Amino acid sequence: MFYGKRTVILALPLVFLSYSCASIPKRTISVRESIILNAEALIGTPYKYGGNDRNGFDCSGLVYYLYEKEGITLPRSTEKLLMIGNKISLRRLKKGDLIFFKGDKETLHVGIYAGNRTFIHASLKGVVKEEINDYWKNKIITIKRIL
Image 1: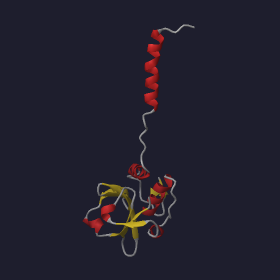
Image 2: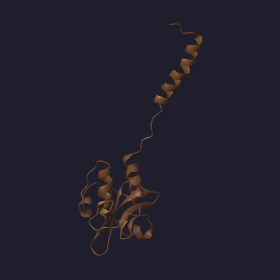
Image 3: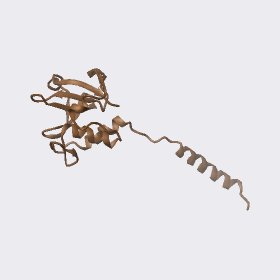
Image 4: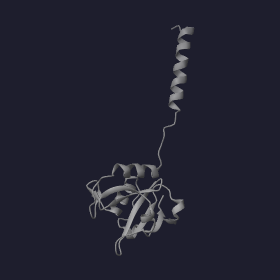
């Protein structure tokens, strides 16, 4: 079979195009980013004591659910979560870090840092995103990094 100059000229751009398309890297997101995106998708989910699914969450159930989605199994209770991870300062916060707060009486509360001085947590109003303002800063017990 005879291939002329015209066939070769038409085939060359296709070869270059297919090579260049195959080499474009896909944008991947970090585990931290994925946790926050999944948490943001849950905003508005109702509060449910002992809840750890889309029907309702308590604070530690939300943390458990979000990390479990990434293949990371954490303890289910706030008290046990407090015992793991590396302690960090407020100024070293990264997305996905766990912030522990004093609750009412002797209770503990936990939320996930979402970036830009905000955190996501399961409050009595449901899953919400809030600013870490003076009210919340004064309630911080510790911050832990799991990732």
